[in-house]
Image (cartoon, rainbow, N blue to C red; front, top):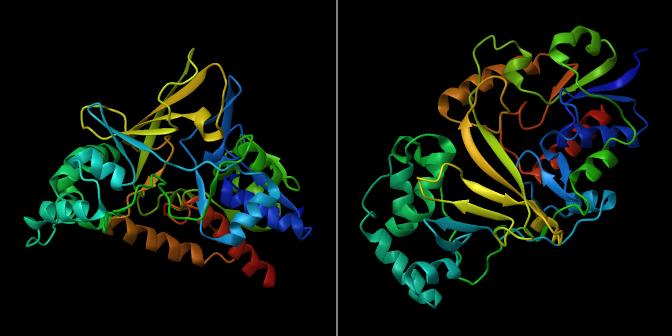
Length: 368
């Protein structure tokens, strides 16, 4: 009999939720994590009594009532609503695109006026069959919104000209003809009071956790400890990149403490011009309505992904998706290993979708 029922590789949200569910069924779990802390990209550092999202802003939102109930039974969430602001060469616009945006852009004051203006903007592009992201966006919203609020940000995010990006990246652009700055349509939204570390700690309460573990360097040793392995790392890395590497975009963060109570008056400000090298500035205290005398901000710079950097956004083009399918088929032939989470699935997941997938997979395995 092996020491553990489950070896879980990675202590991010997927692995931690799986460990929690297994613990509720009195299953023995070992969670191994390559970093010096648990929580994956949800990890928060505490600076000047402010919970700083160390790997980029994480805003919990969901329409899944069961998932919302699940996380709130573990920790208390506040009522934070994500209402980002776009800065285009010093001009400020509300996001998502709504009546506040349209009023700032064109001076229109009613939904009818805004709809008429957008119809005029897109009319000259109605005849085109979009061959790239730029043409797709122009056909959807016209030149004013595209050139001020989409083009620069998108090109910085992906590291390529919009004319070189596939049209499918922007299938639609939500336009709201109401004065509402709430970025998400989901009815449930908030941030854990006290930061995400509290949530992760609750999820891992019944599991053994080992940090600073390079699992693939000691794979035989660790896999021998458990009946089933839950692998949440990069699927191509598990197989030694035998058929090549999947591609990602990465991020670089520059965080600083300022001796002022408020820097920008909002948690998230996007910089949509092409000249500014970063895509957004995060002011962390606003996630929890902080009143600390100092503030902490983070500039977020998209960058090319290379081995050793954190893989944030999969490049789900035809070439990479075909390569992932080959790795996924190979993974399916290993019945004692379950591959799950954003890296193993080569997909970008919101947090609620990650939790839902972990719950569903555990339920499926537990029934067997």
